[in-house]
Amino acid sequence: MREQDEQEQGDGQANARRERPHHPLGRAAVVHHEVECARHAGNDQCERDCNEDTHEEGRKKRVRYYLTMPGGSRRCFSMLKIRFWPALAVLVVVAVTVRLGFWQRDRAHQKEALQARIDRFKHETPITLNGRKWPLAAIEFHSVVARGRFVPESTVYLDNRPYNDQPGFYVVTPLALEAGGYVLVNRGWLPRNAQRRTVIAPYRTPSGNVTIEGIARADASRAFELGQGASAPHQKIRQNLDVASYATQTGLPLEPFVLQQTRDSADGLVRDWPAPETGVERNYGSVALTDSSRSEPGSGARRARQAGIPAASDAPSSRRGRLRARWMLLLLAAICAAPVIASYLMYYVFRPTGGSTGYGQLVQPQRPIPANLVVRDEAGHPVRLDSLKGKWLMISVDSSACDDACAKKLYFMRQVRATQGAERERVLTVWLRTGDGAMPARIVDAYPDTRKLIAPPADIAAWLPSDPDVAGDSVAAHIYLIDPNGNLMMRFPRDPDPTRIKHDLTKLLKWSRIG
Image: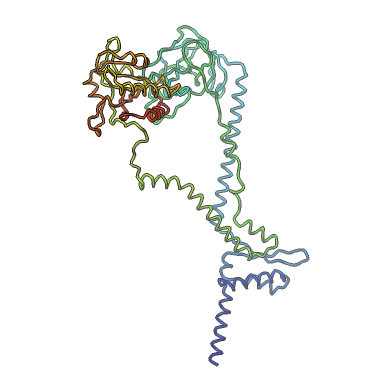
């Protein structure tokens, strides 16, 4: 009897486990019961069972509804409950995305209208400035003709305006109109002095009345600027120029626009202006609102149910879909975070020690050409060595007799300079002779482009460093490189490799805009 009771108790526990919703057998029983109820939905008792025989976890996450099928039968369906906060977050993201799309579309329409206006003004009759005050909105981008005389003492030079990779200025001068009033004229581009940036290259300004043709612009172009120090009032050279502020500063009744001169007047200024652009093409790609940003979670599961697949059989695939979506989210987060993490590891963990990828050894600190270093040319005339500033100088130091090692260095310098192609004019080879003896004829004939200067040996030894790590090293064992600012910056090793010197010099000429 006791054994029979124990067996019945064990069977009862097994049945209880099967009836629990979290047990696999229990879940299978629930699925089977739902399908059977769906087949016999006309039975009220079965319908009540479909509503009531639901495990606790299912009541928390799923709701059921019934659909009347053709023939009067009813099918039992279930769906996920909509949680308030996640649904609200999705709605907010969708609303913001759609609003940004409309904003980008509106910006594109505005720029299209502005571009159409610019194109239309190109073919209209130019406006003549005859004393009428034109608002900026009505005249901007329109062709304009003005007659008057320049006021050169009020000229302003706008710095950091490159042209064909060469630094320079925009020359902006007020024009006193015959009909009264003034207008600022952006006359053109002027190259900047490479040695002294405050020295203005010569150009011509007509003294009498002139006729200026051009395009009305809101300003004379704006360059990026941190703070206002570079555009402070009463400066001839500025970063930017505001028309209203300049009118207040000078007291001139200026028109609210700048006339960008287009017609050449033989004054030495360049007027190769960039065409006005609105950048409308940047807005086209942002207008599209993708369906993926507005898709609803679980839509695939609902479509499967509506196709006649029982609701509970979707649970594994739905879980796989959610897991796949989570992995995709983690992957996107990892892609975004990877550059930050990599830079952090490289800087704080691996801690790069610096070093150089160049062949030549950097001279630190830089040694400028001594101001009192006076050399003599081949005719014996004194020359200040710093007068060669503005070019890259490759320097070799040897006696006038020029042995084989000296000739080898001169040959290397000549060949390295020749390999720079069009950039070779930025490089000058210099032979500093430590004596005034006669030079071999073969050297004079072979290197006509090399400057051969006589320099005091003591001054050269005090300026050019030898290699302290090499015993018995001397200045004559190296080739030195001077930058266009007159600073000794690099020393090449003894018995140098000309190919590696060429690579160093090519990189310097490529990335440097001086000299």
